Image (tube, rainbow, N blue to C red; front, side):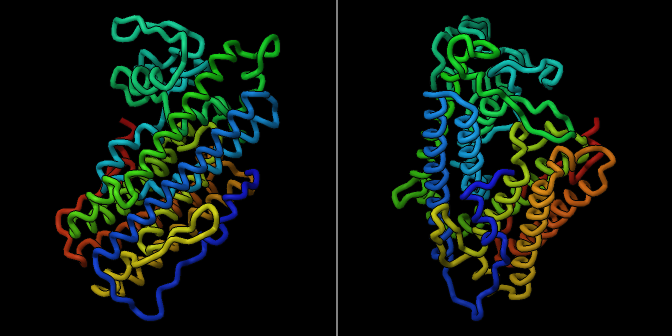
Length: 423
């Protein structure tokens, strides 16, 4: 992968987080404050990096070129760094779960948006899988004619996104923008990401694949929505924000929210749905950032985000650090050995995900790791899965140690009942 300045943070982030030399007493309220402060900072970083992405896209659309497209792609990858570290705030915070589908829903039937190689689309049970709104200024939805002469935020958000109540009809968010920047990855489990030509946005006779003006409208609208949605969530975690107020209203429920997010992302979502499932199916369509081949980095920063909230430390994109009393202080007071084990498990999972990144950087893209018969790729992937599962067991022990009965973590058939994914 191309070097990106925000990704240089990974060198520091990947280092193990050492336990404090002396245990520091902390109250649940102080732990919740740190958690909310990290959320506020991380979402603010996600918002500002999306604004940087928006500026790069506007520059590209103003004067399309190969260099401009690559600059926009670079900004998209950089924008994923802080956002993926916010995913740990899902599952335990309803306000985040209700919002998340607008910004990071996947997988998507990309034919809803633009041209595709039809044989490569997986939306056989989705009537809108090949709608191609970029090419169609008018279409029928639910028996009604939709005027799509102008592609704007209202069309994307209110009409197309999750149209017909189909989750794969993803019209907004990072992955819609990703598709418009890269196009489909038609390489299967071979090397190479999507390779959309910059001329898909050229004007006049230089335009390729038709409708370059409408494609630009869609890209501009989707990026603007992403910026607005991230600003909204960043606001929810400020001192006066609804998410912070809800978290702080009940200390026990707040601590349960932290552990629910950690455990559910670690086990059901990341180890299961995002990593193990794709390996079971040997299917690159199951990878998180399937157009750009940025998946190993997204997995890595998910892992870092889990560790951030446990130890109460977040490294911002400008290099500054937000830190305070972490959940580790409460676990250490209840069971010092468990705190040591959980810290070690979090470091081990981040290290395993770093190995996944290093393997991809070394020439074996994530798609290639998923290929049938690729023993080395399977070893790398399963090392990450096993580390995430192991740390989840310690997260469950922490829930018990803190007396937080009734906490339920997300599961995954790919981990709990693997044979069912083939049925």
